[in-house]
Image (cartoon, rainbow, N blue to C red; front, side, top):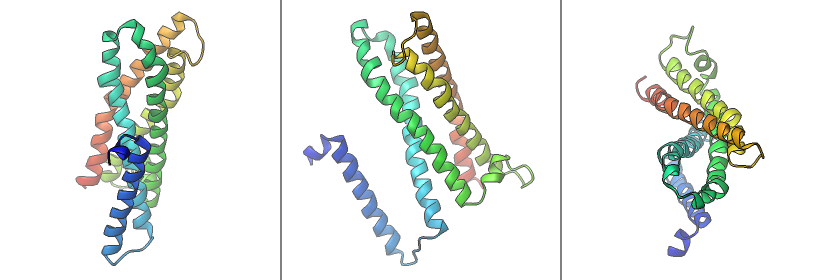
Amino acid sequence: MVSILQSLSKTIHLSILLAILLFLGLFFAGGDWAFDQIFWSWLFRYFHVLAGIMWIGLLWYLNFVQIPSMAKIPDEQKPAIGKVIAPAVLFWFRWAALATIITGLIVATLNGYVHQAMTLGIGSGGGKNAAIGVGMWLGLIMAYNVWFIIWPNQKKALGIIEVSPEEKAKSAKTAMLTSRVNTLLSLPMLLSMVIAQNLY
């Protein structure tokens, strides 16, 4: 077991295997199973939650751990963050954001509320559609920020794209402030999603 846990790849593969076995046990043990709309909705909701945990988890890691810790790291050690850790974090961060949006839209489409949610429940009684719609719009804004503001500016700040020192500093500040906007929006976004699923 130690050899499995020392390898992230082996750990993830074992986790997937355990999840599949658990799914098969729970899905087929009920006896009333079908690969119908309910199944696909559940499957994509599961993917949506996984991607969302990765995305928001990394957003919070950046804002609660990495950014506040940078001032405490000696200058000679900072290249390890900028050249190794930050690019890896940003890779998973941006693709998890995209996966969260795509799987969320698939869930909304499969369940037949994508239009009502995107129009915030206007004309369909509000309530659940308004709640999930607010969450969806906040998620879309946050994903836009990731792909079109944070990532382009981080490429400059991390030296992936060569720019002047002044532009590098400006890009780092823009990326950080936009990341803080996403942190600001994350709690209302999650609240809207949870309300839509549990209070209606």
